[in-house]
Length: 370
Image: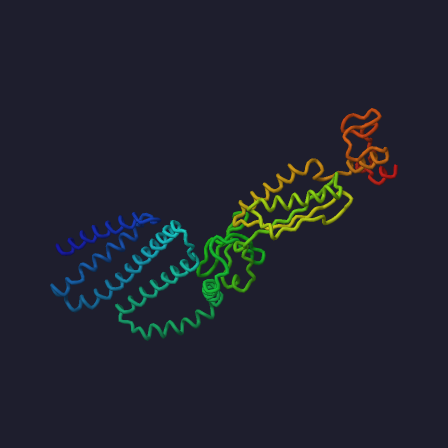
């Protein structure tokens, strides 16, 4: 009895020291109580194992106690190994964040999942050994049962092998923005059964690995450059000389900005319509994040507005009618001073009165014919 009490005390101290040491590791959390008790039991059994050989044990008691305590030890060892593997994963993740070299999170996740599966299998084989179950019979039973289980759960097996294909092909990494089917979002985790994707609406979608492997994956996170395509509408003052100067200024603005790829930039007049002249700008931003792309686009558009003046924007039906009346009155379309009593910025004779039909809309064609 004294030996058993001493073993309990030593195991208690040892389990406490182990839990305290694990808590100090980077990224680790406090050990749960079940881990402490499993470790305490395992260390107690390890300390008590030489006692039967030293003091002896009755044959009948030995026949039943060794299988029982052996199975208990296998379960406790599996529980301890499970938590140690979980702690190792957190420590590796914390250390990876401190380094500049990229790590393959998908491979690490699947390796940890495979190790957990190995812990379960090893615990089961250990328990079978203490229960005197032949390993060949156990493996044969697992083989026959495995065939039936594989047929019944072929979708699960497809997801498992799909995870292996994702590791071998590596179509994306954790954090990449992907698009597959009607799902689009950032990859958060790749597990044995499914891949977790967080969408732009901040919802989480679990995509089975089997379906993900069979579908087309568009990895937007591996783009070298990001397409920036703009349509600028010139509504006033769009003479050929000004348009040529405007497009040249756009090219120079792109060339001076390191955020854009000047060699892949196209600027030119694309269309002449009723509302104005359309200038197309197609370029690529050499950035890697959405925020950087937004900032580069924002700075470019603000610079365009500053340099273009009041002749870049949209035009309304009212402004179009006003321009037509100015032309008929012999006033420059871009004049800001009216005649015949017109105030500054108004057409000659004051602002035109727009007649409305019963629907409340201004009859543009009728105003043009007047």
